[in-house]
Length: 346
Ligand code: SAM
Image (cartoon, rainbow, N blue to C red):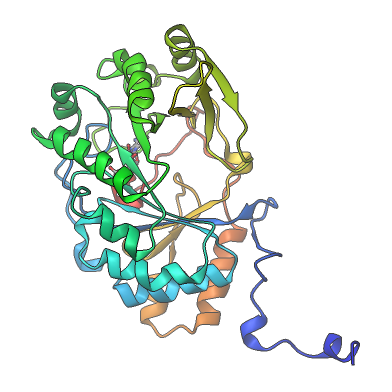
């Protein structure tokens, strides 16, 4: 009888919003994108991220079964884009098995952010496990400068091999993240564009955000979008590409039709908070609704105290309802979060 089902109390499992009604924050933004930091340990010490002295939180990391449980709950709430990150996610044993265990839930995107150092031997297995694509950090296309920024002497060749292995394994498109720092690598904007064309990759320039351990950030060290664009245009004319409203990067192809693509992520000079669709989980099980959140939601404590799936779901809904409207970088009274990027998950 068509009318009968309308008066039925929904079963408990149906109480979460359906994927098509989705997860929405207090400002009406659809939240579809989750980043999980699987570890906050890292084998690189990039100057814009780490001091190199911070302690590892390995002891507090969620176990893989805990991650499987939470991932399924987030998926049931409408999360459709999942990115695994860190710290350096390839340092955590069991990553491939975890990916294989959650790949079948059904994702619009299932991606990994890595420094690429250990990727060469892993790319094929990650692909077989169900990973779709990778973003690889590469902050210089010159080996000496790469070593100065990452503070890892011989990493450059390994990362190049990692990029090649990701392409060979079909983890496409391969995206390259470069954080531009005035005085370190801002003279390489054109060289990065050449790199994108030569290797048929997406190079994404990221404005430096005040989330580092080493207190390097000043407004002057940030290389803003308009400067990057002007320099690129002089080297290779660009054409703007359309992008989804929740995408963080402004996207450009090369006007001459060459392979490769440029993205510019400008959280400082052109914030995209109004379209933010992201939430994050730290390696120790804290839900963060913004990179710059001053508050975290402790799902680990709740889980370990015996919370049911529906209690965890309610806590996630509460957190999302409190998602910050925007970050306040550059405004008077801006407060850095207590944790830095490597501990939040980039
Ligand atoms: N270890 C992986 C890697 O190197 O890509 C994943 C973690 S890392 C924290 C994720 C991304 O955050 C990297 O692309 C990195 O360049 C970026 N990142 C780190 N600190 C940043 C900062 N202060 N401002 C902007 N981007 C930053």
